[in-house]
Length: 356
Picture (cartoon, rainbow, N blue to C red):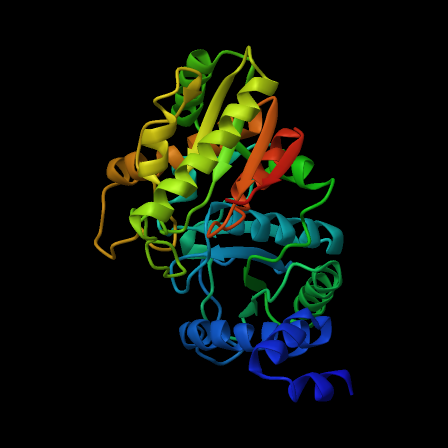
């Protein structure tokens, strides 16, 4: 009845009402996204005779596999991480084995290795036929508490009803974002020796006491290709936004006058401006989004490491910061990257909203 009344007021209000309605977000919007995801994935899983078995198949026990293999967009690092941890915690709760198949845009093992739980799986042990392997897809429509609850219920039921030995999960579900996230992350991962060495080198430059500040401009400064295409701002508005962000960083430094400020951003322009301050430190390297940076051309592991090292370095250095800040201004988008890092590091997180 409420939506019928709003409908008469115009398209904009209808859109706002629908997006504010949790039932619409879950039963319509999220399911449409999931259907689109499933259409991309299922052609890779032909149905075959149930008598077919791969020679090197693992045991008969069900195994849940978090999949990031380039068959569909998987989001940025934080998006993928929350989906992996969500699948791990649910698998653990249900008593199933858990593995990770993360090969795109880089092999996860370039940067992370198992810590106390071995999540590796030999590619030869993966099924890609139904019903031996069941692909399970779930796209998220919103981040409401109610929908997060529904995400877990949906995946639990899908895993429970799946046939065959393997359940391949394609999702960035949010329900792992709670007090168990840190514990789960550290059970699964530790940096490789090469990445840990780079972390140590940057930590020596920062010293033990520093804070971090993160920004996400999504291309409005005209220097980054995100998954959402946006138009670059006119020069005057770019300057206003840059100045406003720098003013927030100056305020943060006044709050922590003896500490360096680690600045992380998707904008080379902003990093260049911020690094002019003597108390600011930025990590050198390539800025990239995991879904938009892949070229489709076969690349050596050394090149892949050099391309994506900054992403992982930034993440762990933010996690080690004493306090973690995220700037949220006009034309900007709140990044999940520093929030996920704050959970991993168990450090205080503050979102700072500002206007021009």
